[in-house]
Length: 634
Image (cartoon, rainbow, N blue to C red; front, side):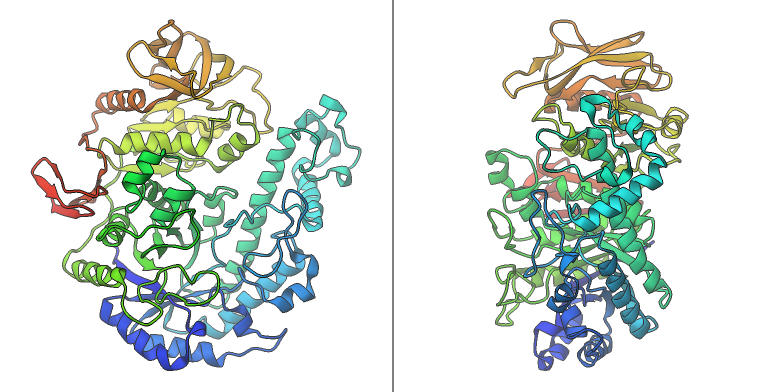
């Protein structure tokens, strides 16, 4: 059983030293055991090139350690100081229009800039040399929120040169690249690799194979950048290394970054995310504006549990109104506690709140903390203290193994952005749509990488929209013990973004072909014979398969062969819930059908109910108050 703890993000450099000891004491009194520092402090650590000021950081670490707090120390590479930009003026990323991402905020660097990459390695190495064996430094964080603010992809000269080198390594010869990309189309052949530009500012759409190669390259640059810092830290410390990912940031492959880390974490802002990145209508947003989407946080908990290979944290938990969403409501009383317990129910080791004290200055002065700028405790401080007290009395155990898996693939998201074919088709939304349907039945769900080789623990695996499945991936799915659910758009492209010669889905053991694809206006839904409709995307199927569900005109909508099921379209909520319910019954997975806004999670020894509603709800023998948590011992 993994020990659970609470913590907070703290910025000692932003407050007078006379406040530090009292802050640390109050953290301990609240029941917090972890504190994250340092991830934005480069200019305070190294105010001029090569001149270091360690006194303040030494003192801060000493004060926090004396209070019994364990420290996560961040590498400060998300905020290179002004002198760094003066030293390397071409280190700035360029956006798709060729405009520089200037100094004056954060994340103002290009992952492909070799000199900045070495500067980042240098500062990580120097910090690790100084604090690597300090007993209070119990974990490290690399950088901060890779990809946030659209900063993964850069169209700089550094990116162009690095991309050309990446292409040489991948294809070997320019003839191989031309053939793989189909450059004979529109007379796009290249004579040498140096002629290959970045796929922006073209007259109309660029070659999708070119775009996919650039997206893969851009993701690999994040992996490379992170790996250099990990190497620098590991040379001087045995403490685990973490990165804090974000919600619905998909521009790089988090699984590949996670391969170099011991723990995954993510920054959970339920109210901000509901406003700016969850597709929902106004009525839904109004209903849950003070609670957040009942499934969005859980989806990411399960995703990052997979990225961390079972080990994951919340590095930043929203404690009150944020400053960056279109609208910034305050959480319903009890929600900060609920979000925290939900994370633990999904296997989080630690939950850290962002931040200790609200800053009265600069960009985030409207972002609430546990304490107000005048040093009074805010609402979330009391909820954090209550949760800490409950944690001391309830031994939250490990996650109950799931029998159902849902595959998530970052490249498939890139494919849906490169070639959506219809405005309503988005891969993330498709996968999240399936996740929501599964959660309705109160079951545990594992999210798995498409490169996961051991799938035998599952009875049911969904892989909607995974655009390319290699022979190895197909073999792992086909030879698993599970019923496999594919489509729509599963295995619709080769690795080089062409249509497969045998036509999609080209899946072993499934004699089926997609003959045509049509994408639908929101007002042009296709009714199903057994109720419900198809939205956004529909495929015309032919093959030696059993039709499980058809449109009212008789076209196959869901088909099966042996243990493989294929769905030809994007089912609406009602049709998908009915379909999922039938599959769960087939594989004999116990269900607990939940009313709207109530969610359920199971550990080895507990069942946890979480009420996202703004009103009390009764389910079975339990009456759960608004924003309430019911923890039931099995």
